[in-house]
Amino acid sequence: MQRYFSKELVNNKFKLTNDDLYHIKTVMRMQENDQIEIVYERKTYLAKIVTNYEIEVIEILNEEQDNNIEYVLCIPLLKETKMDLILQKATELGVSKIIPIQTERSIIKLSNEKEDKRISRWTRICKEASEQSKRVDIPVITKVMSMNELNLDGLKIVCSTRNKNNSIKNVLKKVSKCDRIIIVIGPEGGLSTTEEDLLIDKGFIPTSLGNRIMRVETVPIYLLSILNYEMMR
Amino acid sequence: MQRYFSKELVNNKFKLTNDDLYHIKTVMRMQENDQIEIVYERKTYLAKIVTNYEIEVIEILNEEQDNNIEYVLCIPLLKETKMDLILQKATELGVSKIIPIQTERSIIKLSNEKEDKRISRWTRICKEASEQSKRVDIPVITKVMSMNELNLDGLKIVCSTRNKNNSIKNVLKKVSKCDRIIIVIGPEGGLSTTEEDLLIDKGFIPTSLGNRIMRVETVPIYLLSILNYEMMR
Image (cartoon, rainbow over all chains, first blue to last red; front, top):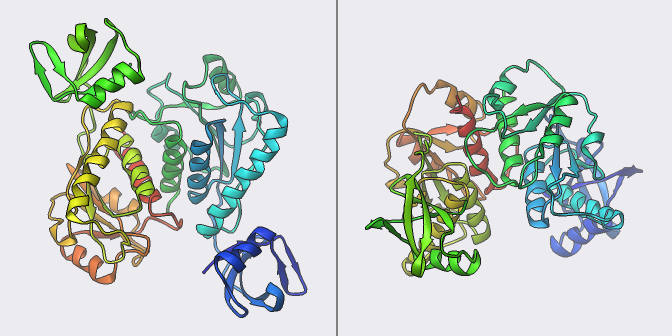
């Protein structure tokens, strides 16, 4: 069943964005009495279309359990096609937050004005992927940050090619329990030594991903797959 | 350094395809004495460009060790963009063989004539991805097969939504050692019950991938990531 996110529930009726209403009316060609799923405050509802395309609650469905661990992905600014792929796949694989980071070797720069537009575009991609993969939340995309601003608590990992011995497997095996995993991924040319050292000072563990040579957009998909697997009961 | 695959070594000179020569001359604009890497019979050589764009051996480089386990991916016929993504990412993640399979619920059908063209196109994508990810081999893409023809030995997994209890983690944990892992992935609507039962009869283990709802093209990337991780020392 088609799923949409709503931010407002008034008098037993959900408010949807114009984009979603367009999707319901024009793309899906739904009619009065057709049913859809609405996610509101991390709970899933069965709802139906009533007069004037208002969306009325039928009942609350089972609350789906998302994994409780928060996955935070810090990724460099990349070309749009790569960025789009990462956002879509990371959402499918349960990412909680995406922090675009400035890195010395990123080719892409964003003006402040463009940044806002870009973030709303990225958020739209994550929202659509959340609906498709039946998530009860949408990943948060923050403003672009510098390495220095990465001050989150949790298990902190920086993907590194310097230290071949400390593999992602070793790092994850040593973790008994954590609420949040923060991963920093470098751009095509990798992070600079200065950047990696700065992160190590901030408590990030330099971690090798193994022997495969992957494109930069493959790395977050690879890592989130591994995290899902490792956290699987 | 740029890497190319060669199938012929005569008098200390490698033969390359016209496509690769075009890439060297026109895309990379290489000149006499520029160096490249050539992979020939799973060994990597340092080579240089000499007169008339002939490619001369300089020395043999260290033989790189690919993982010894063979990963065989059986995937339904999908839209080209999805197929391309799978082929590129699966190559980066070390797939050995890709078997396109006919499934009841695939929307895509291929005539015999188109099949040959499509397979050479797919092989070209895998070849380029192998060069980029510095592999010493290129994944083999077979002709389109029916479920009935999937007669390979090894650890056999069919992705299933029927049995939630037998997770990929359980299945892989029970394996002590194997030389080949064969994975069957269904199309958008999943495999039919008949198809899944046929594969179970052939020794495939119905396996749940966990609770995430993924697009079909994400599944092979997710699974190969997990296999790489599980086999990591």
